[in-house]
Structure formats: structure tokens, C-alpha cells
Amino acid sequence: MSRSGVSVRLAFAILLLALVPALLAWAGSPYFGRLAQVVLVAIVLTGALNLLTGTAGLLALDTVVFYGLGAYTAAILSVNAGTSFLVDVAAAVVLTSIVGAICGFALVRLTSIFFAVATMALAISFHTTVLNWGDLTRGPMGYRGIPPVRLFGHAVGGWLESYYVTALFCLIALFIMHRVMHSFYGNAVRAIREDEECALSLGLRTRLMRVQVYTLHAAIMGAAGVLYAHSNQFIGPDNFVMFESALVLTGVIVGGIGSLPGAVIGGIVMVLLPEALREIGNLRALAFGIVLFLSILLLPRGLFSEVRALALFRRDMPNSPWSRRRRVP
Amino acid sequence: MSEPLLQVRGLAKHFQGLRAVDDVSFDVGRGELVGLIGPNGAGKSTLFGCVAGAIPRTKGEVRFRGDSIAGLDPGRIARLGIARTYQNLRIFPDITVFDNVSAGAIGPLGISLLGTLFPPLGRRRDEAIAEATLAALERFDLLAYADEPAGNLAYGQKKHLEIARALALQPTLLLLDEPAAGLNDTETSELAARLQALRDAGLTILLVEHDMPMVMRICDRIVVLDSGRKIADGMPAAIRADADVRAAYLGGEP
Image (cartoon, rainbow over all chains, first blue to last red; front, side):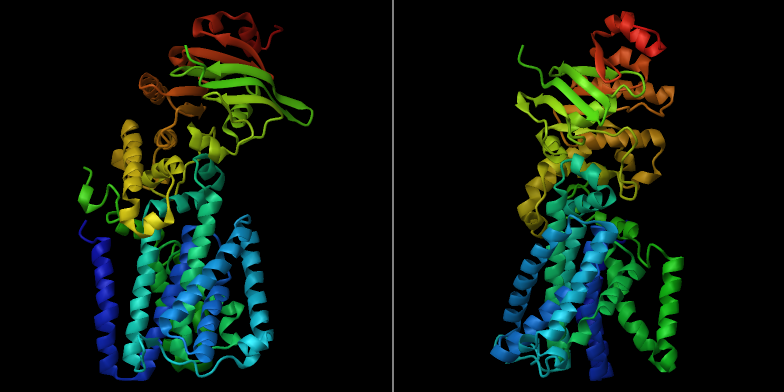
């Protein structure tokens, strides 16, 4: 097997940390720098949702809840208390983990359509809360003038520097998701997805694992929200409507449900395709819809299917008998 | 002689008026291969479900290694050392053969999110899971198919895969629900040889089966159910000669 997951990971890290920044510097336009950051945040969101919806098989529409909680945590803390970036990330991760664990505990009793509708209700109530809790969220006005990322006492102002912070964070998030999805833990979660009753009879702790996955996905999305708030410098309730959840879910499905490389591709497509179609004006939304429809119709397993992704990463699963350290004939 | 591994006492399962399992008692000793037979609708699978915890019993007692397990959830029972297979194949078709079997190994060994995020912390457990998985695959000659999606296997191999997955739990007691159903003669005798090898390696097996020649050939002891009640319990030769058993199978009056 010539192509292994290690070389794919290395190539992707080089792409994000060297090639893309070089291209951005060459283009020299803040527009592309900004676009690249939006793509990176989208990749983290599709990745985290793919962990829940793809690997664990729980169709969720609550992306905006945790993404929004993270973004508002960053906005409120940094505007009102002048906190640094790492404090914002820590606060957002702690908050979304706690909220995620509580919601997860309540939600994992539900499956399939019931789970989806319950998460949709969460998303709607989050939006309504943000809109109406004016004292905390500034209601429909949203937060303006969120300071750029502050790291170790100095502001990361330039768009290239700011890109690096987002890229580094995106790589860390992807690495965490890679560890979870391409491991025995991921195997167990997929087994629960395939047949919960049977998985239970094998002794798997199905509910506990589902709560863990739900909490982890919430924490990753919360951190993505912090990045979004600092890079966009403005957030409002309109950033966190149900439609955004549906868009991330579409990215997961177009990329390949259950596949981490698919989630990366899906995140890129969901941001770049509408941008590329900007030229055609009002027909953009229609063209975007047609492309998505055809993609799902012709490639139901996505652009990079779960089977292919697992085959790619199987051989460098940590501690597995398939890893280079202990190869089995 | 120590006490039996599995003791079933006065077990009953009523579905409204129907007494699917009616006051059944029997033992399975350590290292025994016991067959559970009976005509269609005799209550074999229901009894099986009650022992494995998948079906809540109406009354009665089930003891495993002397401790009561009746009323525990199926996950607890599996982690205590009772693994089962299903009458109608329940493998995970979309994931690989290796991943199917590893799910069985993970059940009792457990898996932690922290050990997954920081592999050095989880190394010992991961290696135990890999070892149990590989041993189970090897025992059923499935190593060559380890990276295939389970749905691509032939029917007989899928049956073997399900038993291999149960074996990966490293159970003390294996409950098999009609493992030979749908297999041809060659596959059935291959399966019989494997079950005998497992028994010889010290595993205790309770086998529900319709294939009478196989049951007669490999079981140490046979329990016969009819209409939810136990009608016979003994060595294969005695069961073959039993008038009640013949009547139950041939439909005559006992």
C-alpha cells in the first residue's frame, strides 16, 4: 500500500501551513485570507458534525447551538473583559462540554428521526434565546468590534498571522477527530450505529459512548465558534439560524458521511462553491442547489466514502496490529 | 465437582396468555457442550433471550457462577462472560470483518476516550483488544478477509464471523442460536468440528439447534423443550430413545 494515512496527513499539514499561505501572500489580498479562514472553520464544523452524524449515526441539526455558544462566549468575554484568545478557547470548550454533556445525556435516549427533531428544537430555542436575551447577547444587534486574536499579550492583527492561528487550530481539531474515528473507539461507535441492540449484547456501553461523542462534537464546535468570532470580528443571531446547521449537514453528506477526508472536502466545497458562483449573480443559489442535488443523487456515499477513508487510515491506527510497528502477515 | 456454571431454575416467560417458557430448570456444567432442542415454537429462542438478558423474564432464577443474573441488562451479562449469537444473522455489514470482531473484544475490555486521544495511555488495552480480535479471527480462518466489508462474505462465513465476534468477548459461556441454519452439509460439519474444538479448549457452550444429526453427534448433553416445558434432559443416546421426545417431534400423543 503506497498511500498511507501518514503521508496524507503530512501532505495536508504542508498544504495548510505552507502552500496556502504562500498562495495567499502571493495573491496579497485580505479577501482571500478571510475566505481561507472561513473555509478552515467550515472544515472543523463538518468534521465535528461528521463524527456525530457519520460515525455515530445520529442525524443532528444543532450545529449552531455549540458553534454559537463558543462564538458568543468569545465575544462576551473579549469585549467586556478583554480576555486573551486562549482564555476564550478554554472557556468556550468548558462551557460547550458541560452543555453538550447535559444535552447529550437527555438526547441519547432518542434515535433516528426523534433525535433529529429534538436537536432541531435545540437549534431553534438557541436562536430565540440569543435574539431575546438582550442584556447578555445584545439581541438582534449582535456583537461588533470583537478584537482580533490576542496571543501571549500581543494582538495577531495581520490577516496572514490570523490565518496561521486558524490553520493550526484546524489541524489540532482534525487530529483529535482522526484519533477518535480511526481507532478501536471509532470501531465501537460505528458498531453501535449499525445495530445498537446487538452492540449492547456485545457488552458495549452504548449510551455512555454516545454521550461522549456528543460532548466531544459540542466542544470542537464551541472552539470553532471562538475562531469565527475573532476572525469575523462581528457576530449576530443571523449567523446562527437553523439554515447554517443544514448547510454544515449538507457538507457532511456531499463529502462522504462517516469519512474525515470527506468532511474536509465537504467543508471546502460548501464555502468555495457559492463563492465561485458569485459571478452569475441571482442564479447562484439555484446553481448551488442543483450541484448539491446532483452530488447526492450520483454519489450517495459522498466524494470520499467512509469505506475508502477507513481503508486509508487503517494501517496507521495507533496501537493497532495493522500499524507499522507490529505488522501481522 | 464444583457447582454448575449456569443454573436455570423455574424460569418462565409469559406473553399475555401464552406461556412461551414455562417453569424450566436445567444446569450447564463447566466445559460442557449442551444442546437445547425442541420443535418450532417450543420456546428455545425465548429461553435463550431470557438467559442473555435481552427478554425480561416473568419469573424464575438464572445463576451464573453462583450469582444471580436474572434481570440484569444484556450489556452487564455480556461483560460478566456470557456471549451470544443471533438466530437471524446480526453482523455489521458495512464495516470490515476485523472491525466487526474487534467490537466484540471491546465490550468486556472496555475502551476509554482519553486512552484513544493519547495512545500511550490506551496502549495496553488496545493491544489486548487486537490480540483477542486476531485470535478469534484466526480460529475461524477469517484473517485473510480481515479488511473486507463483512457484507461481502459468503453466507457460511458470515455465520462464522458472528461466532468469532462472540468469541472475541473471551466469554466463559457461549450461547449459540441456530449456528447451522442455512449451512450446507460440508459447512455444517466444519462448524461442528470448530465447536468441538472450542469445547475441548475449555469453553462452555449452550447450543440451540435444529440440525438433529449435528446436535446428537457433538453435544455432551441435550435438553429438550416442547410447548415451553422441559420434557427431557440427558445424554444424546437417552434422548434418541426417549418416547416423549419422539412424540413431540412426530406430533403424537405423549
